Image (cartoon, rainbow, N blue to C red; front, side, top):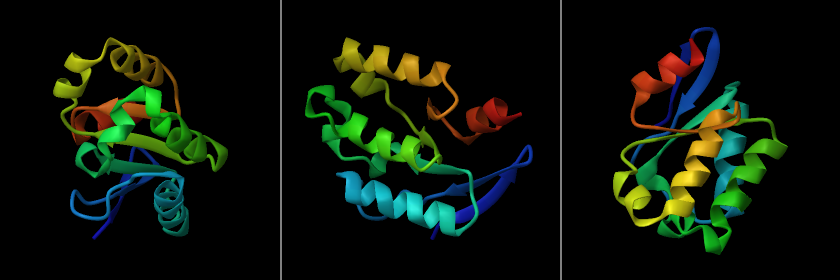
Length: 119
């Protein structure tokens, strides 16, 4: 079950680790719809919910999913351990670094990092 939290005045919907894998745009739209319906500005999605194709940039899955969040103006925080995926791909490392410089999509180790970013 998702939980609604307010962090530094920003409403976030924390999605649980268990649940359907986010494997395409339709799955992203479900998360966006749920987040918006709950009145949240950010969706917090555990790394474990993302399809492995998300981490292989050549599949374009990451770009397609993130683009949906941008279109609907919902922030996306991917939370969890990405070390194995980052170690395997310099392109993914660069992509994550670039996302983390922005204000729309963040890849964070834990909820504490999210609290720091939103402070």
